[in-house]
Amino acid sequence: MLTYNIHHVAIAVENLDDAIAGFKSRYNVTPISRETVHDQGVTEAMIPIGGSYVQLLEPLSQESPVGRFLSQNGEGMHHIAFAVHDIESALAHLKETGARLIDETPRVGGGGHRIAFVHPNDLAGTLMELVEVEHD
Amino acid sequence: MLTYNIHHVAIAVENLDDAIAGFKSRYNVTPISRETVHDQGVTEAMIPIGGSYVQLLEPLSQESPVGRFLSQNGEGMHHIAFAVHDIESALAHLKETGARLIDETPRVGGGGHRIAFVHPNDLAGTLMELVEVEHD
Image (cartoon, rainbow over all chains, first blue to last red; front, side, top):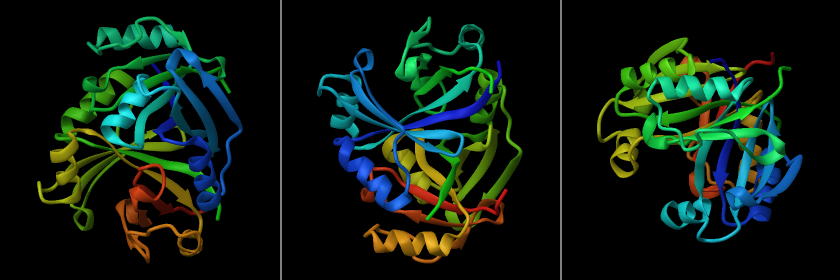
């Protein structure tokens, strides 16, 4: 399995517009996309920083996973996503190593990418996502 | 201010060796450096992934900031660090915008880089670090 890049770092926020304005003002970075992903119950903004993104996540409802995260933890980092070239082989490898997969098979995430989540209790208390991306 | 890359994503862990072994086994990535930074009360391992790093942090004591983080939150993402070319001008800009700086002036962090932290209450509940890096 080759993990060739940090695709994004996701941050859960209460208000997407406020967070976008804060990143613009302070770090002079702006989103290149904004998308509602109903499957994950979020509206997400992707802010490119170098070859990676900061992904800002605003929940569609308090009962969504990100809504519950905000209720329990407040705003903050939610997950880290690694770019992979072949998500099926990456998931097969993770399963072999005993990783606890949230998604046994890929589903479609933001930007139309095939994605899968790996449980945070599995390694370093950190929710991890795989994002399948074409070779550069 | 130009933030040109995600320098690293830091994850607080109880045991550095266990976390390194987990990342090696599951994601086939390994640290290029391991360093004790007494000023921050941590031993840190830097795992290169693409143009960024995952930084694993093990506290030197329970009373250190990362030790207290672990006591309160358990293992998980601790901060995100942005690479900047000129940390003084970046800090000046942040201060102008009303950001709450933990370090008003740079200090020396891992790898000998000049670094500074920005308070998590300041934007998106996320502890942010600036790392001064030479132009590529």
